[in-house]
Length: 357
Image 1 (cartoon, rainbow, N blue to C red):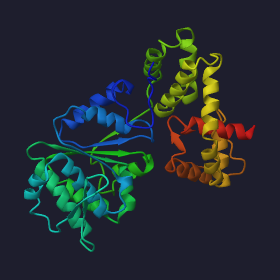
Image 2 (cartoon, helix red, strand yellow; image 1 turned 60 degrees about the vertical axis):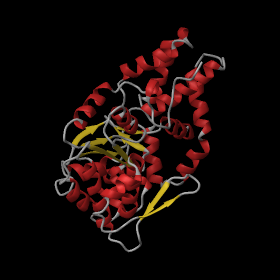
Image 3 (tube, rainbow, N blue to C red; image 1 turned 45 degrees about the horizontal axis):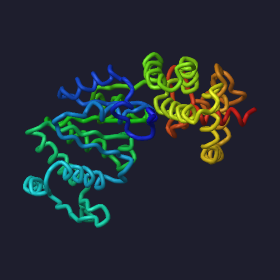
Image 4 (spheres, rainbow, N blue to C red; image 1 turned 135 degrees about the horizontal axis):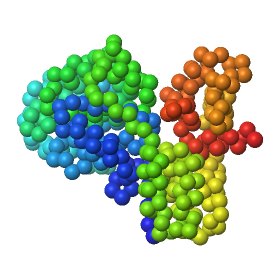
């Protein structure tokens, strides 16, 4: 039987887990003239959700991950490259007559794809404005959707790029923008801080963990053909360990399925799967741990202890230091905040806990 669980890439089709409420909100926003800001920690399924909502639409879509570019010119070139995947060269060539800097086109012999670059020394802001103006013009016939993933990276690309982008985007009438971000504090600074150019630029949406009941139903339906006798405790043990984190729930369920299919002993099978996956990443966890300072290690060790807040067990560490450490660990992706602070990766949390025994 095919393993019904998938993680690590965009999830679609039978692997997609519910999110009906979020899909409806996405569809409503896309069908309006408003923009959307979607925030959640990494591996919560933002990209999969957006791809699901956009699938089947007759409108042109461009998706860009800002972590794949290092400056404004590269961003403009990548946007233009995505356009060439949607439209034939001959059509775009005729509508690029307003460009103030003509791009250079070449064919990559390895991929046979078109590579685009701009001449050194050209004005980055003008280049980006020309490309975004082209998208607006093409959207007059069929409204465009532009998805900018990891949008918080805009702050570090170039000074005042956020101001320049806002000045262009606010004048566009034929484009829906979807801004995705995994750094909650940075995204809030961009879209919720009054002095920010993008203050309240789009409808804000936060993507939470998948509800326990929805994930229970999802896991139950898929495990039923393989382990009907131990179905309920297996599902409960998986969700208890992962706390319904979308990525790690799929990962653990995938491992449990493989172990059941290998007909390994069913007693404590979830615990055995957790131990296997924790050991599998031992080298990576060791490397991450050794790169941290003592304060960050101490905070993470406290977070592995159920019911113990790092603020209530400071052991001489000032509250300001604890807060700074949690903010730093959040930006690095080690810690997320729901009702309280918790370690994002439950297997890393188990690895840290085992070290303290």
